[in-house]
Amino acid sequence: MKANIPDAPVTRRGFVLILSSPSGAGKSTLTRRLLQRHELQMRMSVSVTTRARRPSEIAGQDYHFISREEFELGRDRGDYLEWAEVHGNFYGTPRGAVEKSLAAGHDMVFDIDWQGADQVVGKMPDDVVTVFILPPSMVELRNRLVRRAEDAKEVIDARLAAARDEIAHWEAYDYVLVNEDLDESYNALIAIISAERLKRRRQTALAPLVASLMEGPLPRHD
Image (tube, rainbow, N blue to C red; front, side, top):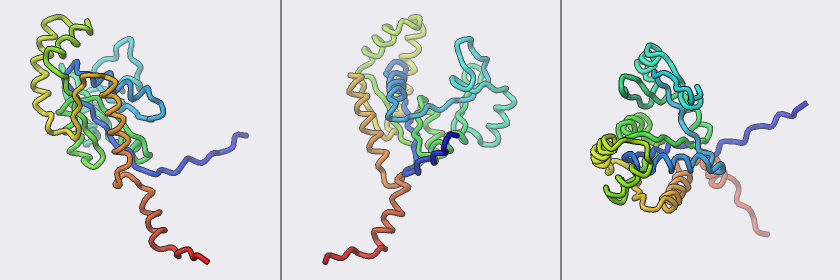
């Protein structure tokens, strides 16, 4: 018979790390590296969507696929931290799953744009850390988009035009990284995560410790 091992006590509340950037500036690569570093124990939020599942996608891992009616009911109940309509399909981040993870001490990473970030910050301002990632130049941004070899020239031009609208919102973020060197930007993100995890308001185990330090009998030196 397998022994029941009690869960480790939760010593801090988790937080949501939002990464935003124009397409090609590096946020998806940085997000992937954070998730692959297992000792960080970062979690990715799984969004819901009303679009059809693609053959390569796994339900519950890539997205939760639901009907338009289900989505609209959840939206009207306030179930989503953020949501948007893109090309006729709805996408949203379920609030309940995020709240549960944070309460258990897990940090979550969101790869979303400034509009989604604004919605999440508005609903849980004390639990969100925002990072905007800038390219070193528009020329380098175009070069990265070209090197990806995923888009036609017209699409790249459209992404560059949209980049300026994204960049215009950089001042709304807690941290801004200029991603000239991917390793340096990644190390800076690790430093941000380490510092945010130590913030007093997230240290749920501190209050009992401080109470014991303040109220307990002072040790005697004989």
